[in-house]
Length: 192
Image (cartoon, rainbow, N blue to C red; front, side, top):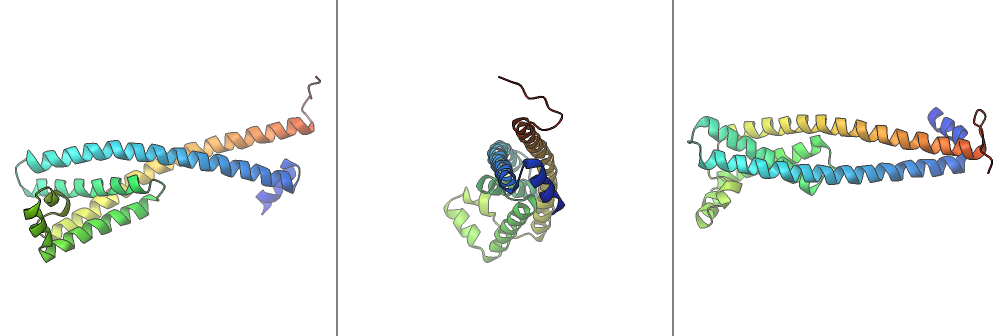
């Protein structure tokens, strides 16, 4: 409440304060749209790299427990990045939850045997739905999703700090322009 009163005093009245808040919200929305586009573009590039790494793990490396875990982790990362492509403004924790739930649902679907039948009909589907249930995959999916959330949260925090600095600069500039227009004390008005 005190911050609002200070904004009203500084801006020259409630109407001007409302206009200032609207300008700040418009600028913040533009920064959010720009951030969403950037986040989507980065996610698309990283998704291509993750899918390539997953295919290398699946095709080129010998089948072992380690390659199975790496493949499951890369699958979860790919799902996380896919959710970002669909919802770039989503919070990391929510996106991580969606990715983990998708991976767990796919793993539980494998208990029915349908992914094996579908994979026999169209082999690339095995890469998306898997072929057999393994309880370890549930743990790997949860861990990989948690790692994605942690990394994404750190990146988002850095980006929001940058956006906040930009928004504060816009607000300071708007306040300085208002002071110049009003001829605030301490400022010399230029005569034309």
